[in-house]
Length: 88
Image (tube, rainbow, N blue to C red; front, side, top):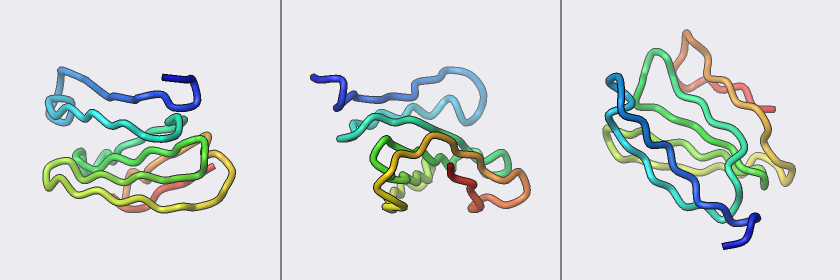
């Protein structure tokens, strides 16, 4: 698999959120990831092609949003609102 199509996984083993393992294979390299402090099963990621992925782990719901054709290099979820995310 070439460097432009890198499988990505977040496999953690401690804490309530980390007990849930996520294994994702994306067409583009994941360049940023964040999760909600007030809703620990809500995870967002951004890739090098401007795609924002949203996962609600406990319900196994996923969504993707094309924000721009440029890559996402930074993500931060607001500590006061589960769905509010800053993207850079």
